[in-house]
Image 1 (cartoon, rainbow, N blue to C red):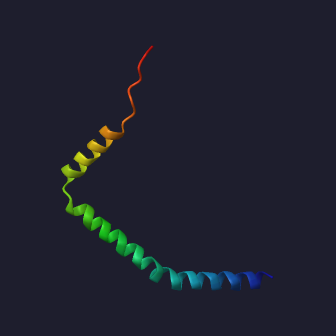
Image 2 (image 1 turned 120 degrees about the vertical axis):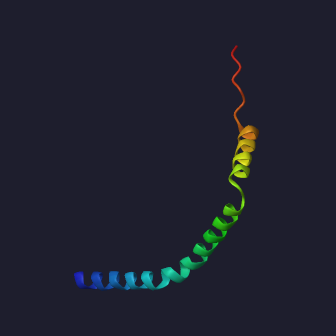
Image 3 (image 1 turned 135 degrees about the horizontal axis):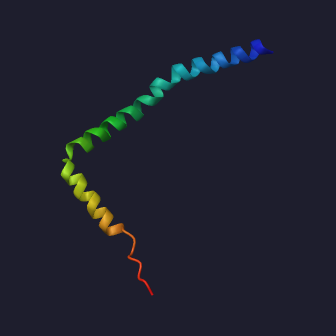
Length: 65
């Protein structure tokens, strides 16, 4: 029984190792593209966008009764 389980786990491992790198390639390419786009925009612009988003979505002030 242990031999069957070990062979099955070896098969699953070999399939995962053989299939995972080609399957992950488009994901890596998309992340690289996103990093390039983020890197093209200057830091102060991201900071300004963050401040604008925070000002537009901040919670309403609490009014004491």
